[in-house]
Length: 236
Image (cartoon, rainbow, N blue to C red; front, side):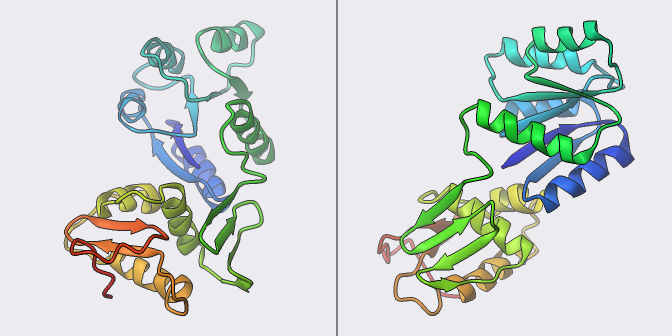
């Protein structure tokens, strides 16, 4: 689940990002409204966490414009403004929920999960992703191939989850870097290739059916089909 956080308070933003990352979310954090709006209009997110009192543009105004563009991603406003009229305004202009600062982190998690359910997106508590005999239980943070439990690091789990959610698609290294590592891809680094190699060692090497395929010059694809054709290279 990818979450966009627009929050100008650096310490609070980092606190939220760290906590949600540990809870299994991928977080993109921006500190200005304009940067947040650009992200909203150019990428897809499961939930948006929007501060109201931003330094350059009101979060209310930003979401008003976002809804006017036909975008429907659930929005949770975060703000110190706790008057009833502010809460009503936030909902009226297109917000889905409203959480006043300071707030307990546990409540933030509950609100996010509620928004996901209400938006008819994958319920984070019960999502199971599967391809062939590989199964991932996001809520329990477990992975099995057949009857064998596979232990993954937090980053390996996030990488496999992303591949499963986009199974069948050819994913460029730049996309994997931005979605899983939250960074810009540097062609001089091999961090993506190393991570894929380590994941293959755990989920592919001991099994006849290979799931992670390298598409030469393009990226990687998770697919159970036998696609050993000219464009695909599973070599390490």
